[in-house]
Length: 244
Image 1 (cartoon, one colour):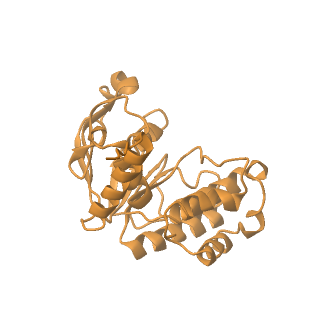
Image 2 (image 1 turned 60 degrees about the vertical axis):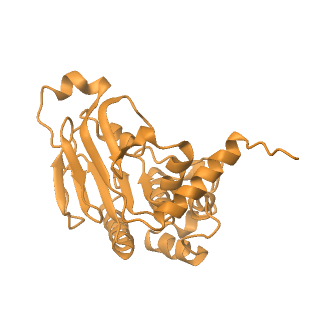
């Protein structure tokens, strides 16, 4: 009788596959905050009013949500909590009614590949890869690519970055990097798009082009987004506004 020993990687992929099977038959991803307070900012937060910190908050699936966040109030920190790359907080981030911490690594990977996408403030462009290769990291991470290669070219043309697709990431300007990061976030499946100052390096024309593309992609998927920024803006028809 032979014995099959499952490695940690085998278990990781099994958990991911099981989770994908579950989410394909469930409703939209629910995101809630339960009295969330960043430990590094606790003293500052208790001294000011916030619509987000230390309160119960439920983000409505499919809604366009704007969080206005002055510098130093934890804007990027919140994005990291929502994407579960930082856990230095009290309270809870709940996903489908369960704390992030209750999910296995495989389940979290499944959610990041199928349900939630992100545009980080620091963009996270891999400089050793071309702009196109940076995009492809997200486009082909599943066996069945969500977007076609032609769709990527169409997005690049709309955001005026076709000419840099084969350039190394290290040669791109900040504005070009930001547009590549936006495209990369849009080529994967998602029900929620989380964005941290997604237009900070763009002029008005390119910011409006990017906003229009984001809105179209979200509406086509019936997806929602959570956008954090320093100021008010009128680029989107927001359903909900919060002050951080």
